[in-house]
Image (cartoon, rainbow, N blue to C red; front, side, top):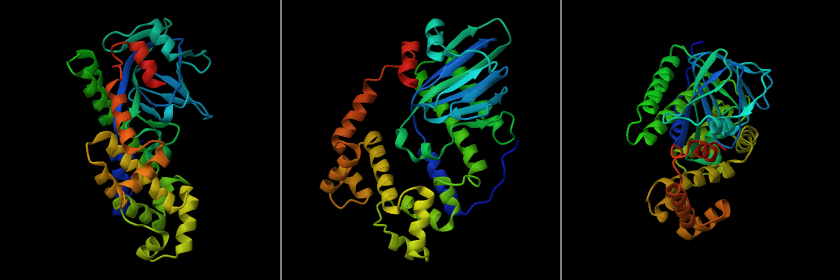
Length: 341
């Protein structure tokens, strides 16, 4: 099915673009399993998983969802937040933990493994992703338990098929410095799935961040805070800027987003500050000013209350964690278990 053409106001499109720009995959591990029927593989953890069907058909069932999803060649599915899910040839086949399969059938250098029975074959490109912003990212809070992008769709299928083909080629050739290139392609697959979901579903979601963007008052208030996170925004100030009632704005904002504007703004500021501490060498005083704090001391105190450590400690820990990570391709089974769980 082709994506629906929907016209949105410029401020809403800007927020969607900003949301997509927050997607940064820090690490990934990819496999190319081929399963022969009967087979069933179960995955769970805390991170985001994706599966792209290269050939054959199968079923996917996500924990907490009643209806299983049938997958065909070219289909891409993303399971955010590591929700437990099972992918199988038949819903009646008993599942085996994916990492047990990886341990029993050690992947080759390209991540290829062969498991299951002697029946019909199904091949995948699948992987686990560590997002740069972690579970606190607003992105994860607006995504459903499952994103399913069908292959062959006119504005989506060809693109995801091309990305998947490049990713498989990169895995197979074993070029030098392969890991960052593979991660970027995995990043692109994830962005493609999220973009498709936002485009097709933002007008349907009843509550939450996406629903807030449909409300003219709340959506524009959110857009203002995102465009100027350092601004001294108050409910009164936002209401005057938007020419709406203070009480109506506060009530609708809390109803749709589950928190008042000042709490949303504080969380937005700390997300921005945390990202800059992890990914840049910017001075902490500069980060403090860009997130609305007049003094470094006030920022440091608030940051420690929010994150449980000072900005300096947070930056050191983030860099230490990045520097000591073991490449997953060095020890495929152990690396996959560390990354995907």
